[in-house]
Length: 258
Image (tube, rainbow, N blue to C red; front, side):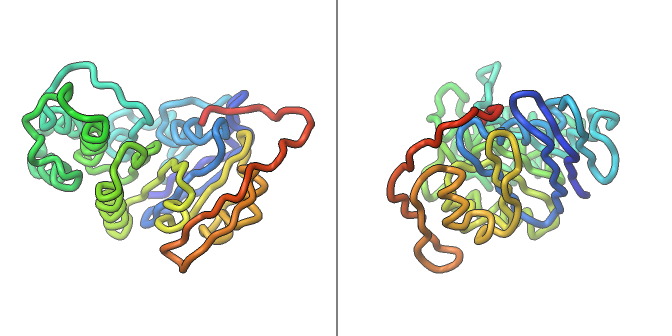
C-alpha cells in the first residue's frame, strides 16, 4: 500500500514536494523550525488539502477516498494532541477502533502493552504526566492497526527507556509490512533508526535518501546552519555540533510550519 505525494504546494508552507513512500520502512521527515514538516505530514494523512498537487494511497487520491477507509488505513498522531473529555486511558485508547466500528479488545490490549500503559489503563487522562499522556495518545493510534503510522514528534515527551521501547515497536511494525513516517527534530534518532530521511528546508525537499546521505555532515551544516560532524558506528552515531554559523543575507524564502 504505497503512499505518494506529487508536487505538493501549500502557500507559505510547501513548494512542489514529491515523495513515494513504501511500506516496510521507517521514514523520518527532518528539517529546521518552519521547514514544513508538520504540513507535509498532515497532507500525507489527508487532513490538509494542498493548493496544488495530490496525495494517493495505492493510486487512489485521498480526496476521493471514503473517510472511513482512509481512517482505517492511516493512523495520524499530531504534535500536540488534545483530549476533549477526561476519559480513562483504556477508553481513550479504544477510540482508535472507531474507524472499524468494533471494540477490538485485543488490539486495545496490545496497544496498551506496547506503550507500557497497562498499570495506567484505568487512570483518568487528567492524572497523567506529559509523557504518559503522549504514550496514551499514540496507543490510540496503534489500537486502530493502521497500515500507515504517521506521527509528529512522537518521541519528544518520552524518557529514554520509552523512546527505545517505542522505536522497537515501530521497527517491528515496519518489518511486518506497515509504513511508518515520523517527524523528528532529533537528528541522531533519525540517523540511527530510520531507513530513509527526507530533509525539508523552507518548504522544499532538499535531500531524500538513506540517513548517511540525507544527513551527511555537509547537509546538516548547510540546512541547519551549524558546524556538524557525526561520530560513532552505524546504528549508534552521535552528532557533534560545533557552533552556529552566521546567517547569510538575502531574500527570505517562504516559510512553513514545522
